[in-house]
Amino acid sequence: MAETLRDWIAERLAAELAPAHLEVIDESHLHAGHSGARPGGETHFRLDVVAAAFDGKSRIERHRLVNSLLDEAFKRGLHALAVRARTPTEAG
Image (cartoon, rainbow, N blue to C red):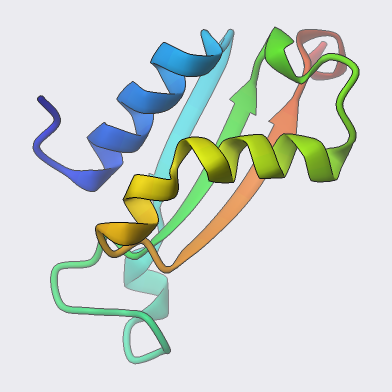
């Protein structure tokens, strides 16, 4: 079981999307003092996901898919998520 929210996000996306590439970057330190920030971080993340699961989906559909997979993370304190979602073809 994942110990951190970052690890949980990575495990969830890996299991559901089988990505060719996945980066989960905790940017919480950049948002200290802003809305949604809390001591200990793990509130603001940036994702770079390359997966065939995005084939044929619009940018909005891709983001909705990722957000739906991470619904539990939002319940656990995730405040903001920046998503870059590409197909393997788009990633080159």
